Length: 173
View 1 (tube, rainbow, N blue to C red):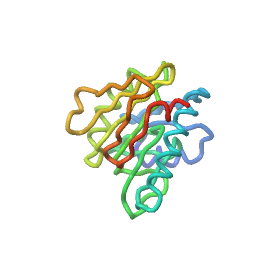
View 2: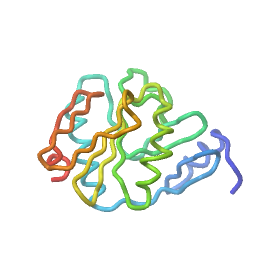
View 3: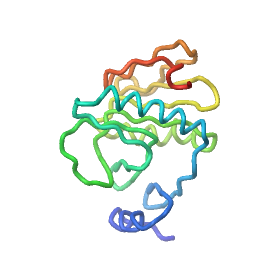
């Protein structure tokens, strides 16, 4: 398939039964997730939803795109704190992005995707959650080159961008 413009991509994507990210004009099909991946993502999304209710911040899980210039990504979870809804199919101003790592994507999520996401001026935190062991990596705008790593069930994850604190046991139950 030839390279797509953002407009071509959005038209194409709205007609597809599977999701695709668009990076540098090229489509990348999104594969299905494992049960563990989904359990962890839902645990965090539910905690965020309850915590943020009534604040004006909204939680999105898996099926809404983030646009960065001409590229489009589907993070596992993201939060934005803006009253305007803007485009119904993508957002451009997340304060928090979370990816649950998969064996095939973890290198990309830690590398190129992290660097791309931090080009978003609104982004304050980027969180990577392992699904095969207890481990969470926290990247913050103020220190995005090195991650804070938590790896004990009793460790406390402090999501500064949204004011939520929970233990890793809460994520992995």
